[in-house]
Length: 174
Image (cartoon, rainbow, N blue to C red; front, side, top):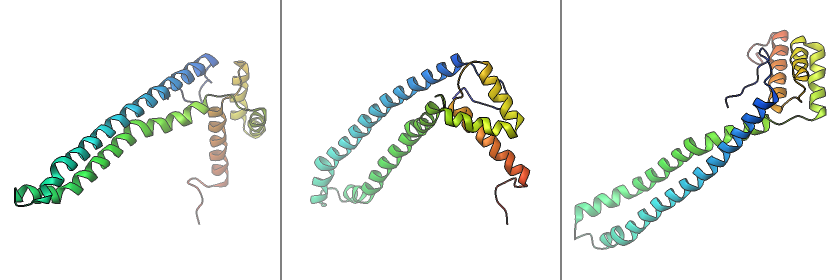
């Protein structure tokens, strides 16, 4: 999404967050429409392929003396063509619909307000780290609640900071 939370920058105002949430919801609805269209296209391709197989290829395979070279070619390449149709269809679906859907499914909850318990957890982190307290204070100055994306960003920052304090830069090492 275009809106990202960063501890080193000024928190965005509520209007920007609401606009980003609205944009993400519209993009998700557009993806659902694309998904339906994609499903229809794939079903049409599979139906045309199956119709061709049932009406042309299988009757030709029943009598291989008609066109032996064509029958042999069709017999050998039919499984590969079937595999290619499903491979290309799955790849396109994954790239066009699934990846953006997963991004939107994580972005939409990130623009929703957190509960009081989660906000208290961030306040507890702010007692130890002044950067977290400063960010939380900036959010309170804007007179809006913390968003889920902000709490996740702050908790990741705290976790990274704690690892640095313990001497763990890239996770655990033996």
